Length: 277
Length: 312
Ligand SMILES: Nc1ncnc2c1ncn2[C@@H]1O[C@H](COP(=O)(O)OP(=O)(O)O)[C@@H](O)[C@H]1O
Ligand SMILES: [Mg+2]
Image 1 (cartoon, chains in turn orange, yellow):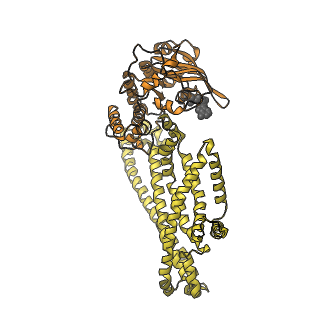
Image 2: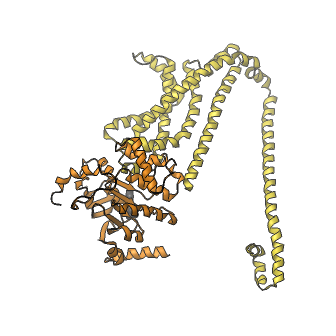
Image 3: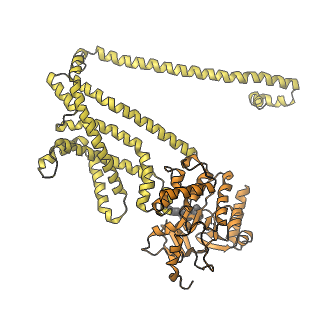
C-alpha cells in the first residue's frame, strides 16, 4: 500500500493478458482493482458525490444501494471516466487515472460496464455487438473474436441468437448480450448499473443468474441494484449511498440485516413497503 | 352470464337477483340472441359505411376532375392552348432532342448528388467536432451552411455560372456547366449537412456512453456506432432532397447548359410552340414520381421498424 507506484507497470500489464478467469495474485496483493479516494462530483451547482471512498479488491463484489438520485450511476460513470470528477482520485490497479493528462481511453479499455437500458447497438447483430470492441480496440482477429463471442453467448444461453438484431430479443436476452459484450474484452472489473431495473419481473432471474455465474468465476464487480435478496447472495460488501456519501458499509448481513444508521433503516423500510404495496 | 348482467342494465339488476330461476334463464336466452345479432348488425353497418365512403370518394373525384376538364376545354383560349402546348406532331418531332438533353440532366444529377452526399457529411462532421484545433473548420462550416442556405439557388447558379469564369483566375473552372453545378452542389450540401446533423443529434447519448465504455475512441464511436445509426435515420429526408435536386438541375439551363429544359426552350422558340416544354415536364415526372413513391416506401418501412422497436 505504501509504494503502490512501484507496482503500477505490472498491474495494467498483467491486466491485458489474462486468459479466461482472472488469475489470482499470489499472496493476495492489497492493491485494489478499483479505488475511489474522496471523489466529488457536481452537475453545475448540484453536488452529486460529496467525497466517496471505496476500494474494490480482486474477485470481490461490492454492491451499492441507495435511493434513486443518490448518485449510484454517477459513481460508476466516474469510475469508468465517462464523467469527469471534480476532486479526489480514481485508481485502477493502483494507478491514478484521474490525473489531468491521463487519457481516459486506456482506462475504459480495462473496465467493462453494463447499463440499466442495455444500450445495445441496434444496427449491429448480437455477435457484432459482442465482437466490436475486441476487434476494433483490442486488436483481436475477426475470426478469433467471433469464435470467442459465440462461445460466450452459448455459455449464457444465447446460442442461435448470434445473427439476430437486438430488437428481436426479449429484455432479459438483450441484457445478457450486453453482459457478454462487456466481458468479451476481458475487463479487470465489471460495473453493473441497475441491470435488472428495466426488466419485466419475470426476466430478472435469468440476468441475475449470469451475474452469480460471473461471481463464481471470480469476476471483480461493482453492482448497483434494488434487489436486496440478490445483494445478500453476491455481495462481499454492501455500501449504502445517501446524498452522495457512503454512510454505511459492511457485510450484507450487517448493512441489510442490522443497519446502524437511520438513513439506511429508512431506505430499507421504504424499499420493503414498495415491494409489498 | 357476465353479458347478461351488462345487457340487463341497472334497471333490471335489482329485480333479477330475486327473480325466479325460470325468469332468469328466459332472460339469458332472450339476451343471448340479440347479443350475437348485434355483432352482425354492427358488422353490416361497418360494411355499409365503408361502401358509402368509397362511393362518395368516387363521385367527388369524377365531379372535380370533370369540372376542371370542362372548365379547361370550354375556356375561350383552349383551342389556342391546345395548338401551342399539346401539338402531337411537335411532340414527336422534338421529343428525341429533349430526351437527349434530359440524359445530360441525369448525368449531372448523379455527379452533383454524389458530391452533395460527401460534402454534406464533411460539413456536418466539421460542425459537430469539439476538438479545439479544428475550431476554424467548425467556423468555416457554420458560415458555409448559413451562406449557402440563405441565398436563393437560382441566384447562386447565376453568380457561380457567370461569375467564376469572369474572374479569369488560372486553376478555376471556366465552364459554366461546372461552375453552375458547383453552385447547386454547395447549395444542396448546406441543406444535407443539416439533415445529417439532425440525424446525428437523434442518436441517443446512451449509445455513445456504451461505445466509450467498451473502449472505443471518440472517432471510432462516431464511425462504428453513431454515424451508421444517424444515416439510417436520415435516408427518407435525404431522398426528399434528391427529388428536389433532380428538378433543380434545370436551373443550369439559365447559364447556357443545354439540358432538357434549355433544349425544350430552344425548340419552342423555333416554332413558337410550347409542346417541347411539356415533353420536358413529362420526362421530369418520369423520374421524380418513382423517386417520390420510393421515399414513401422507405418512410413507411422505417416507421414500421421504429414502431416494432418501440413495442419491444
Ligand atoms: N448529466 C446530468 N446532468 C445533470 N444532472 C445529473 C446528470 N446525471 C445525473 N444527474 C443528477 O445527479 C443526481 C444523481 O443521479 P444518479 O447518479 O443517476 O443517481 P442514481 O443512479 O442513484 O439514481 C440526480 O439528482 C440526477 O438528477
Ligand atoms: Mg441510476
